[in-house]
Length: 384
Image (cartoon, rainbow, N blue to C red):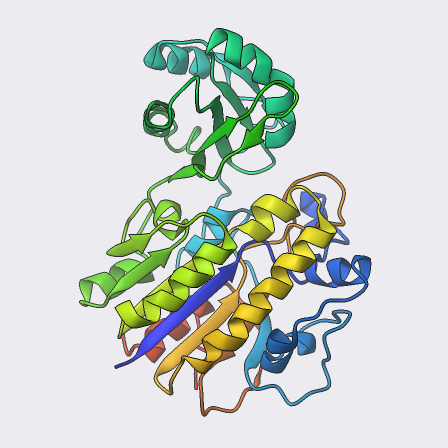
């Protein structure tokens, strides 16, 4: 019984791509810059798998005999967001980036949206989520008007206090937005519910975030596996990223620790098929907030968990660890960064090798398909 596990360390990039300057990201390098700023990283398990052989990372040796295969991947699709990265891993190369709205959403569209939800909105500009609730939270509480905003990514985010607009109502508002934000001009990658709690001067976002993704434009590896009778088990926000398409079992999580625990539990639930995990804290809590020490601690926590997880795998398991984009906590601003992503692959009893620079994230999907012996015509497999 063959099984593949892919763990996406959300935002853990490993160096600026050649076109990074086009995105304003020249010089970004999440892992290398973070390691220097933090005085080094203690990642012995990832070191064993070959992480230090991909790029110079302070505290992580590149001189060892790696137990895993190691390399990095170049994103073919335009963009630097979660949806684009995950979709490309599963076989979709976007020809055009999802639309961006750096100056806010068109007034005519916003008016239609407000009519549809029966209330006016606040905001409608690009902002940090924590900053905008600090700026507009009091007015929202007084008026019950939801706060809408965007970022450097293709997102329409709706923030609301859980005691003012209950979660189910917020999710309903997001679903209305998702139905109205359609391609080509308005097809944003994600509508995101951003609930928060607290009082004036101390508003805090909760873990009840929910992503409403655009439906994938074509079948992905998840659909191919599903149609072939294989289990596709999504952990974290995987189900949301693919709008449920091709994911036949899933579990949502609140944070990295829960995601790691659910991934361990999945080994007992999914004996064959594909387990797909996203660990979002690196991005959401530490990358965007430019929290170097928090990012370091989260990576080291993952590394400690990974040591025990590897012992649970057998010769029929393929483990892939990668990322979907960068979010350098040492870089200016608060947005994602256009970077290569690390690629680590491990199978017990198999010698690791240098995977080089892969031309497209979809080599992940091709390798999973090859391991599970499922025909798939996108990407190039790197499995043995």
